[in-house]
Image (cartoon, rainbow, N blue to C red; front, top):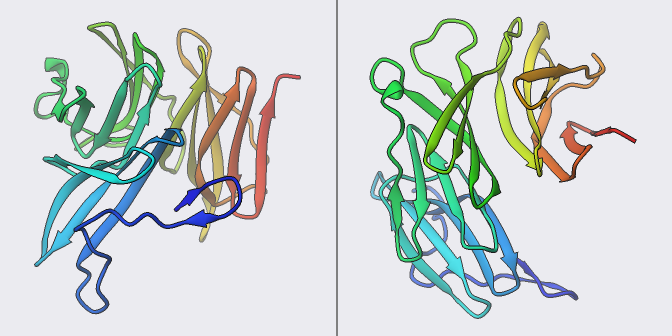
Length: 239
């Protein structure tokens, strides 16, 4: 849906169709990124006849243009400069202005060090961060992968007892945050916060009573991070 300043409209992508009851066929959107009223992206999958295909949809202010993606993407992030990145499963993808292309990862991530990526954050034209978990890894296999120019850095996240997983990464300038959950008791969980100090990820204390992370993290400005946990809005502020 699109907000025009007064009301919501529903510009349906042409030729894609909505999900059909009883069949599950249709388009399922996993993430959306809007840069302007005439520049927005949505990604997800098209499910038809028990087959999934990835899809990218670009909105130009009046209509949608479809772009094929060889795998559906779970998270995307863009910048007005034209930087557009996405992650899904083991793949990192980048839009080159015409089509989505797979980005080759460092050889370190070949079998058995494959990583399933969860989220992406674009700092600027030269720096991108990715959040993921190493497959076939006992314990805490969560990492962040940093791309600076054409160079790559791997940064492991600190060990957490009974970790359920991390969900998102975001930041403003060089102030980066990761959020997730850990189990603290039967059918209970607590929200986790990590902050990048320039060299490593450090745990940020969150009240034990705050549980059930509902979404990701948003950092509108350095030193100001927001997250939603069930019916509690969390804020970490330096001021």
